[in-house]
Amino acid sequence: MHELVLFAPEPLVEPVSDVLMDELGALSVSVEDADADTAAEQALFGEPGMPPPKEGWQRSRVIALFGAEAEAREAAALLQAQDFFAGCRLLGLAEVPEQDWVRLTQSQFAPVDITPEFWIVPTWHEPPAQARQVIRLDPGLAFGTGTHPTTRMCLRWIATRGGLAGQRVLDYGCGSGILAIGAAKHGATRVVDVSRRAPYLTGWQPTRVLTLLDLTATWPIRNGASHLLTSGPKSVCRAWARAVDTEWPGLDGLWSVSTMTGRPTVTLFTAAADAFPRRPAFSRPLSSPALQGALVTAAAEIGYRVV
Image (tube, rainbow, N blue to C red):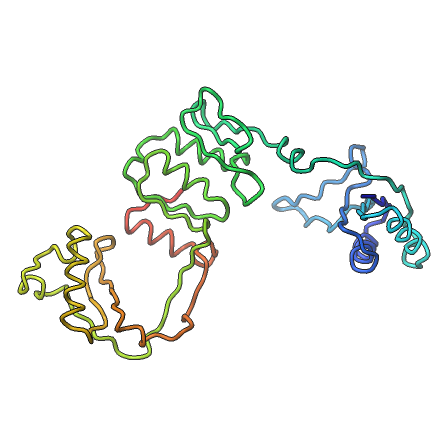
């Protein structure tokens, strides 16, 4: 591998980078402040109430990586022959030493202490001796590694506040699901993670009227089911549902009261399969910002804790 290092003023950074990637075969292009670590260094972070930051530094180093030295030299020659390159200049061309990039990346991540007894530990490290609760998590696969101050703060709150035993938890975020994992390790029994494994909220609009057995009135009592049909053990509820489906094969499903929300809910049988189109009416990931308000409200209504 060889890297080509160029100087470029702010207006030419993007054109030069585009030519390197799109036309000259660069494997990658990175841009750095040419005045970094000097009195002229520029910060490009926006602050509330301040003018928006510029898109780039006034003076930049553009670093392009090539697979072979000949390719890097050819790219340098072609660039220097272009009219638009005026104002830019070649800073250097050098070989990039071969490294074990996986090991180098891993060396940057050490175990993270949340509390003296609660640690986030990559799989290539051994947990500290004092660790009593450990989350094994390899950085780099998704956001949420435990190193960011806000993540550590939330995990420390989970670990030190107590009272999560038996609680329901909704982890609303986008990443590894580390808060949901942490909550589960500290006693939460029902955890909903809206990011891990990419869950979706999906809805269908039936194409015909559904025939449902109403279990919210007196039918269960008149047929010897009492309250067990909707609030008893799952094995009892399922046995009744199978019996109803067998007795009335044309029935599309059941209309009952949810034991979680106390609201009416529908349980569908296979007979209802022809009542729905192949494509849903809507489908969005639970991590979508558009669903945040609805998820938080729903979590509060059914007793989930949002972390």
